[in-house]
Image (cartoon, rainbow, N blue to C red):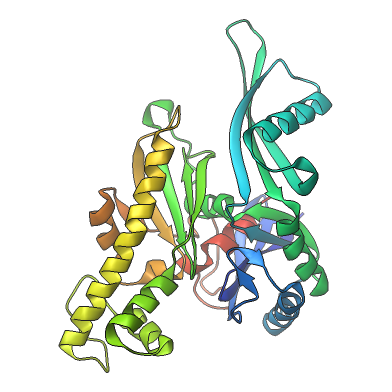
Length: 353
């Protein structure tokens, strides 16, 4: 029997939703976006649940989105993700206790202040025949999750799940094709947000590593504003019309101003590239890490012309802009417009179980 889920991404400056019909496979029915006033959400946390609740209520009403099944995403470095192996634990209650114990060892979060979830990724026999389970667990501070839950409740939304944006991103951008063991390599998915960017590394099946980087499209806007000595709204318009892969001149600028704006964006992008390389080096320093296959971008900032090619030169890994509908069916006309990279996280959330 078919059912619908609305994936909801709450960013610092924008709300994005994807309405997904699930009936054996997933079909995209509708997308919607709306600006969110500054200060309601910051650093991935809800600062004003009442204001967010009011904004969500208006957003769902304006776009005719169903209230009965909503999945929201979180992206914050106060969320811990680990993969562990547990041997000889078969009873479900014992497994849950073992995961809690290992979580308390691995992450500096008091469990009475946390929300813990886990999933068994695989099961195999150890050298002595004892079953070994590979388990992925996620621990988040309870107040972080409660902020989103309270806002959704205030908006009259039935929250059926809270998921990591990193998992949703991989769900949307990673083809379901199963890679052979001899082909295993890491796909790096990045959602470039307004204030922060979510990075997720996958082996094609599971999330191997995730991190939130305090850098986003707003940093490029600020760089242009400083360089050209213009207001933020003017700098934002310049950024959206600028090309990093050519010498075109956006309307209203001189050739010299366009050159300076491109240089400012390039410098801002190099700052992100350094953070990205540092994160990927940390990942590759972990036992069992994989070689990097490619970087796939999503989020509104990924659509800046020439950004993917410029980033590829800086990090020496293949970079492309991803297609968040790679695992979806959808008709010629999706209500709300054409789906694209800005909707990747919302789509991935709607695809979640």
